[in-house]
Amino acid sequence: MSDWIGNLIEQSSYLGVALLMLLETVFPPIPSEVIMAYAGLKASEGSMTLWGAIAAGTAGAMAGNIFWYWVARVIGVERIMPLADRYGRWLTVDAKELRLADDFFDRYDRWFVLFGRMVPTIRSLVSIPAGLFGMRWRTFLLFSTIGTAGWTAGLAIAGYALGRQFEDVERYLGPISMAVIGLLVLIYLWRVITWKPRA
Image 1 (tube, rainbow, N blue to C red):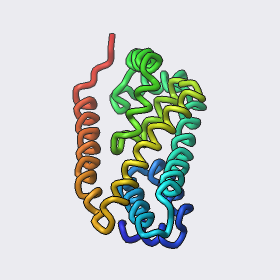
Image 2: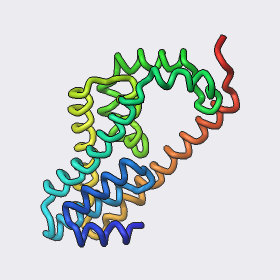
Image 3: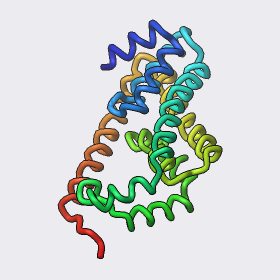
């Protein structure tokens, strides 16, 4: 996958970075660690600027973030409630838990979005509860952009500083991403097994 990412960035420059980050947000298994670190490498070689790479990566990721936000916003939590009651075991939530999550999100939405954008794998999912629970559009856009820019900038700067050793970024962050995915799967399986409808 790294070769494919590298070839697209070399051929399409900033557009390639933006497109890859858009795809990464919509399809999380595409690693942003490799995309932005490679963009930083190309910036260190002079084929693009570091700030341009960061801007392109942020713009592409935000396009995907906005897409998921509006999909979830259109669906809305009220449409999810009947599904939670009917398929609660497989969704591992019921209507009451959704209301509790809604209350939590009303209190901490901006911090959840801001810091969630900097966690591997989780960062691609943050838009869904933001839209589902009706986070204000301007607040979502502001805090999501700040968090996304911080993540893409950190990876690009690491690739810029490491040069041809940019793969070290993937070497360290890759296992973290896989650990997060594994943890999410285990939590889901545990909830499916132990889930009981609330009285």
